[in-house]
Image (tube, rainbow, N blue to C red; front, side, top):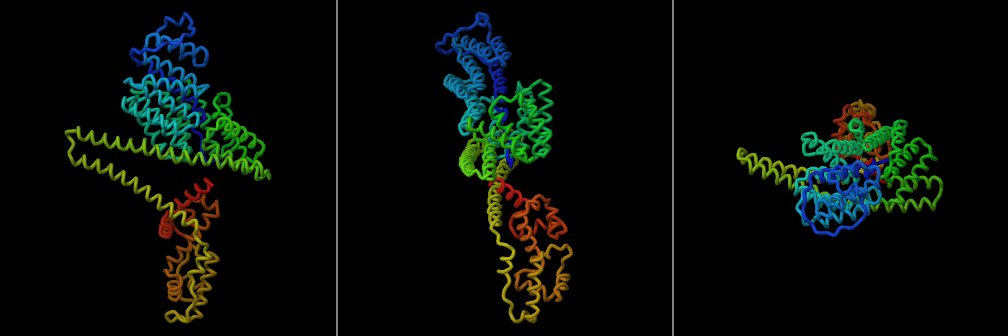
Length: 585
């Protein structure tokens, strides 16, 4: 039943932790600019009035588990900044309140972000107003407003590129990768995360919060490998995350990675280990999405163990959380699909209809998000990055006195070729898709045979009609009994079985089947293969080599070539697309 893994479990808390770290970088690097603004008067303890900005922030940072105390420090910081008419530090104060608010009210966090943007939109600063747009995007993401989140990420990305803010660029690239993962562009997302890890490993210096960034990348890579169905690789990065989070005593990330190992164990059908890991994280779950994903996976585990009562309980819990948040993520679709099947099984027509309507609604939202987000990502993120990379290459070549014009032409040509290969790849996938869909409509073997067998003539090149009739009947029986699956089948062996000679058999096949003996056998095998792949789930789980052996081939290469020759696609592609189509349904 499960076709997705989550990217939102603990993301609110993880984003909050990362924002605290980014705020630290901003506060340590800020400078003063005069700004006229009336300060709102509120009570601040006398002990805080004389403290420096650094002391106030240190107190705020050490009070992260005490919201009231944390807010007092933030108010003292903001009050001091307003009294000094310091626009950047006022923005830092709003940033602190946005971070604090994100734990309880994302809408309020967005209000603070808008204040930051309004205050700094005409100021030239490495962090602002980009930071305001970035945090606003995070808040929109956690509210499930993915289109608005992407819109703010892209604006923040422009400022980060302009100011060469490597810390913001790191987060924003990761955020775009998470959006790609959320809506199905799994290989692209994995490439982004691996590139992020490469940047971190190559140069730690620009990243003042290196270990936090490293943990975030491990999280993203592990999750992405699950979606790409590479569970061993996913486990490797989850274990790295556990080791790194233990090394710096980060309980937030540690429990995320424990949860992740539970998810991996689930997909490996190690349900006992999965339950143990998932249950360990319960005391640390705080956000609605934490609980939704916990109940989602437990529901699936018990469903697979045929424990209907517990499966229903946990899916109901997950569904009630969705009812409150209305945040449509891929997991929600699986939950609605479960209830459609559950109520159908229990002949509860009213509830079945209710969940069919809910499923249709969720599908419409997923389809809308997938279409619009992917189009926007390609147009405003992927393409500009390609163009920027092209411009960077050209600029580097022009500045280099030692490089010849041949190298310039070669690199630009390589870029164009790469672009052409991408376009060619898209076109090829489109062609394969059409061929695959055509195969789904293929006629049955009996219908094919009926059309290809002509009425015997009286005589065929000296062969009597009696012999022709006899051979055609034998061929029909041969096809119906799947005799073409024999590994030792040859023209001679088949002619002997038909009590005729190989010359007669070859001529009859050439005339009535319009192909030579080898092509005739290959077509029968491929037709049989397609039929089995469509109706036999076990058959689809075989390796290509095993399928080839079942069909009478001596090696996988010959089978793949024959399959491609007849259908225009390879068997591995057919199986993958069929499974994907089956999951979507």
